Picture 1 (cartoon, rainbow, N blue to C red):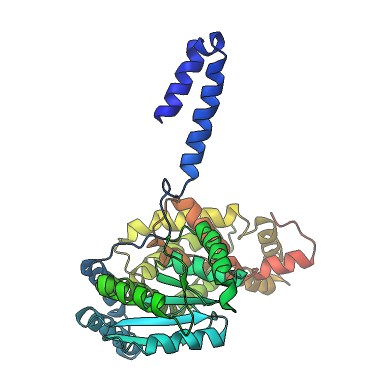
Picture 2: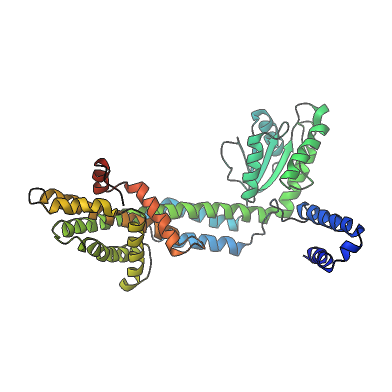
Length: 407
């Protein structure tokens, strides 16, 4: 900012016009500032590991426990077993080390070298690149320049704040130095440390084993905390998904009950203007009932603005298409087709309540997520999601087949 202020002052003062060499100085300062901003030392390194503490992990586990308590005993039992295991990890910090790579031969060689160390308080596993490992320390073994899949795996591991060693195991000893230089250039793009990659050969594994033992000695606690926190986040997502399924199962019968009420009330209603009024009244009650399932502690009066806004959006976005509503009224205006018109309008009213119910489910499920979006935008997203789940209303389908305008 200081450099930008100096450049601006020079330009505004007119002094640069009297001294042409100042333009060269300005260009040099601008280029230097651009280079400094792009240099690894000046940017926030994605590869830096977050500092974890037991309180952070315990809070994550406590948040997950509150979700699990809402589930029936039979559904929370397997997740509670995982929850207890994660709590035990904090008391007995055993490090899980994973040897990862595309070459099975290289993975086996590195695995054997690490297993020969008989590291205390460590468990060892080996995997391919098919899945992201559940481990505290990852040894990514490469035999040449990073492939696209290896590069992407490193990005994923960095995003998850994994502790990673890139182990360079060349095809031949002669190409070891050349490969190490090339790998450093690739790893610089990921802003990994200068100690990467770590060279390895079966007859000379000291560089790898020394680096591994040093990391385990100095950062054992942080390794376990970071790995436990990742597992706790994954468990939280599983618990939230299980709770969402359970709540949807409870919400569906309620939505279906309101569908029948809306269908019956609309079918016998002779006044077209009362259709949306009755749907709005039922929607307020439906909003309140679903809010109780999703732990939204608001009064019935508080549900009314949300229901009205949702109904307004349904009309505005074409979910309730007024052009096809007139078809049902026309059918009800004729004694011969009154029953057909009543059934069509009743089915459409049921559709409005069903679409509203699914929209509210999506809204309540996503309302807990941090977001800066206004209420209208979030309801629009929920309504579009619900339209994909429910599809067209009966009147919309019939009106479309007859070529009637949709709005």
